[in-house]
Image (cartoon, rainbow, N blue to C red):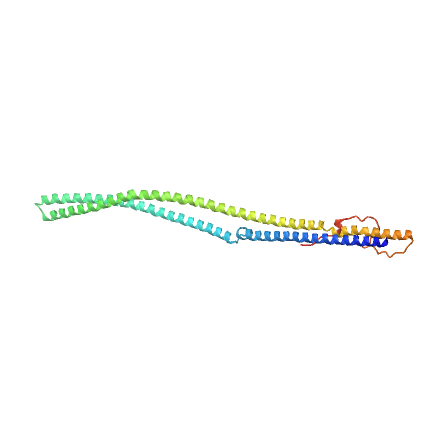
Length: 292
């Protein structure tokens, strides 16, 4: 009978240890899988940080520099075009003033031409009074030719002044229209550049928030994984609780030997306890898992 009890105890101990080994291997496998999940989360967030913080999240990134460079280029180009239009407007105003001067000069030439005609007529009158004086006759001829030359030149000046008087107002109108277009473009460009700057700032803030949330999520993953593995640390305390059955069997063997008054070589319990009371299985007492 004692041999049968010993064999039963050996089977119980072997089964408990085998079960404990299986659960321990399962916990280790679960730990490796959880650790792999944490590694993947680490790698993903690191990659996310590289991708987001590099081109847009960092103020000195290539994209940020390109945006600032393009914005500065547009500002400078707009200012340059505005300056050129302003200078052109000044030149157009100067041309308009010159046209007015040419018109005034044409009027003065016309006045001189009228005076030359008067002198020519007077010379002819004096020539007729002086019985056909060759001097006055020659003067009259010269004055007549001069009057014709002045009239021809004045006609050319008048034609030029008339043409310019028609062209310059149109030139002024086109210059003013161009100035309005440039001013409108400058205002629109400044607004769009400011909008781009605001969007870049918003994107940079969103990237910063996303990275902070990712770091917090990773910390939560690590914490929850740590808690999950700690909850799986139950095999040792379960084994201790199951091995208490062997303690009870050893006690029963001693009681039977005493009642029968026989001596038997009874093996000590596989797991010694202070008392034979039921051991409360408390997984929290098994300790924490430090895997990360």
